[in-house]
Length: 252
Length: 262
Image (cartoon, rainbow over all chains, first blue to last red; front, side, top):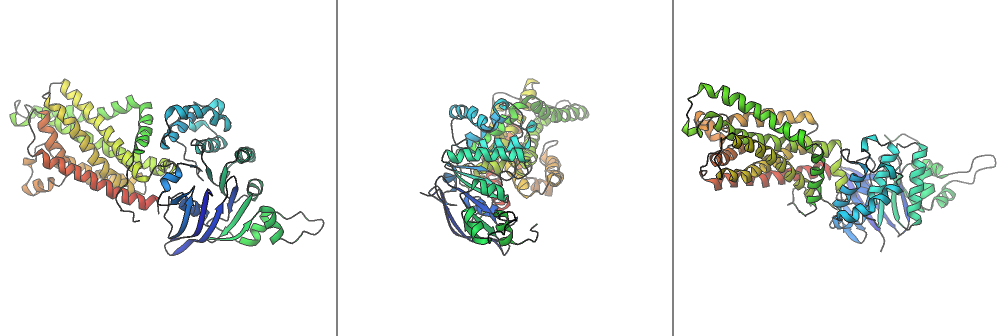
């Protein structure tokens, strides 16, 4: 069973089609990337997958459950790292994990047993009782990632997980995500950092104006779309593919 | 599936209620004292100040003006506590902190989140109402044990005002919006619902209009109970408050679904 299958997804807002017929499937243990400029429809696609927005048409199967009909049941086995920080500012790091675990119906003893390992994973071993307000941006992101793992999910959904982080914090997140992939976790990731996609994703789709305009392995996309560079020029990378396919005009 | 389809509720709401409780527990004592201070100042100020202008014995007022006002204060304070929680605090969790958004990434629906907010606001309102009830009972202004029956009525009053507050929260663009609700709805209602003086003092038209206000029904149940009397037609008042709770919750849910889940 594929962790996520989407077929011909459509969603419009006020007559504008934000998602215009998206289809893709993610295999178990895979890291699949959705790339695209701002406004390409990435976040709307994710919201539809999680059952937080009802699509106009299309079929979504999330961990074997039809969405949005059984979205709540499906989310039992999903971990989400949202684009914007929404940790609970009134709680410590450990309390954030405890309270979030309860939303999954996990009993306190089980959650408490998982907390030290998760804080350790997030590099926050000494910060169990630290107030959220005292954590740096990178620490908050790592704690959000740990929070998304509280239910030991089958699929991890990450919406621009390193936006706004400095290079050190970003590399630490990448390292942790690679660790999760090595353990066999499945990841769906949106990003507009090409380096992030090249490092993490086995397969990716480039979206623009609500459509997937290219899909494949990062290396193959480069070979497919960019002619071999002449000697003396830097080798082509995914960013060149992205700009070639989506154009150079500004998107916001 | 329309935004105004019936709620589907589950026990996951309890985990959201417990989240709010855990936050409250960290600030419980200042919160209780803060909730108690303001209504007490009004009650003593008006009760003894204004009360001294009135005859010392007022049998139809439960003995004295301060006893009359004490019962009204329990109701008004419950209303205020429920409204503040369902407006400012819930808005902060929904809009500023994005707490609801985080919760909905877990297997909890917005229906459950809003149910939890409703029950939480009503619980805080009950605490506020019961705190005043304890103080006025200690002062000998209530008649036990019948006054204990006021406690479920206080909770029901909290539910009705929490549900109404959640409608306003669903529509609010910012905190400033809540001022309209207080100045145009809550404050006039406090004056027209028999909190400070009996409804019979109002012109007939106002008396009829007062029957449409939820606080009037809360006062009509709670005041007689505190005086050791059985309320007249309690079933009607309970039914009105219960209907407001269900109807307003449903409307608030539809509006919040439209706001957050479009």
